[in-house]
Image (cartoon, rainbow, N blue to C red; front, side, top):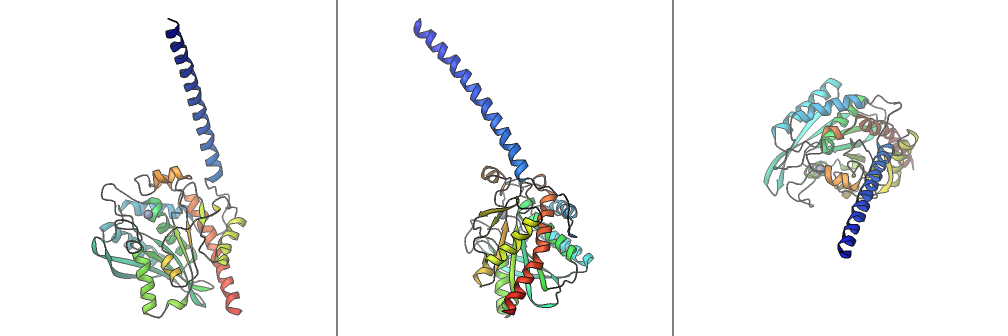
Length: 331
Ligand SMILES: [Zn+2]
């Protein structure tokens, strides 16, 4: 009998302790989620640029209506038509550059897009992104953040700047085929940016490109953009100094992590390039695993405030980048 009592007693203790630990865990989790939202959810108090994050968010909703933007799909063609129409409205010159990609799934027709904002200084600065979504036959993958956020953001940036600017000519390049069709490798990824660099090289125009800024996954409500350890210091400083003074230091992290993206073919060609990516989609590693390349990459996880913050920072950074290039040219 004594033994039974002992077992029962231990059972009560362990249930009591288990419930207590569970409560503590819930309380800790709540505290963490509150802490995270306070620390990383972007808030906009004021803006000093013509970039309109809400308008970009509206365009993102329209683009997602087309469906998954897999290369050579109807939704991909609709997205191109949408961008073409928005550029025509803004009076920004626009061209399509079709090419054929050799992929593990055969030859695939793809199309890069270029919006050109004429400058008054020799040389070209490139602002680049990808508009395709990863081919995921088992799910409906809309890529609201991954591919969608930057497409809408680039449209708005072209509108905000307009047909002409003081400084170097700006090309806003919307690349097709950034995503791997099967498994990411040097030959199965970055189809658009690799074709673009090859074309520039063949035409002898590679030297005109003075700097490349690539954006990817910048719509995350819990925005945290990594520093790119492969970028030149002057290019990183041009962006981070503006982020600090614009009050967005929390969204532009002091964490360096190399991420392979569409800036790589340019960097390999010797062009100064920086990649601006939030690779903690949702604010943590755990959230990222749940959200990246999953059906969770949906518009409710993208915030106009994040598009606005990156828009404000880049709009002003472009002037700093021009100034740095001016100084380098004078020396
Ligand atoms: Zn992706």
